Amino acid sequence: MRVVTVHEAKTHLSRLLEDVRAGEQIIVAKGKVPYALLVPLPSPKPRQLGFLPLHVPPEFFRPLPAEELDAWDR
Image (cartoon, rainbow, N blue to C red; front, side, top):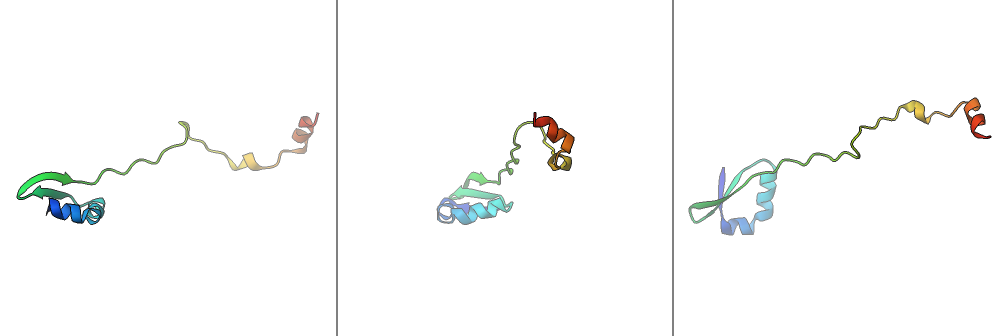
């Protein structure tokens, strides 16, 4: 686990965040006293649209038979 000073953390925050995102844990210390631990957060789950899984079978997109179409023309 790498230890960086507050000054180094302020100066190179973007680089440190990329290292944390890659899985590294970094301690931020003031002098020789550790103050904070930078750790990666878990990835958010992909959001699901609605609450029911939706599966549309390929048959849904086939043209309707002529009898069915005639019934709708009334």
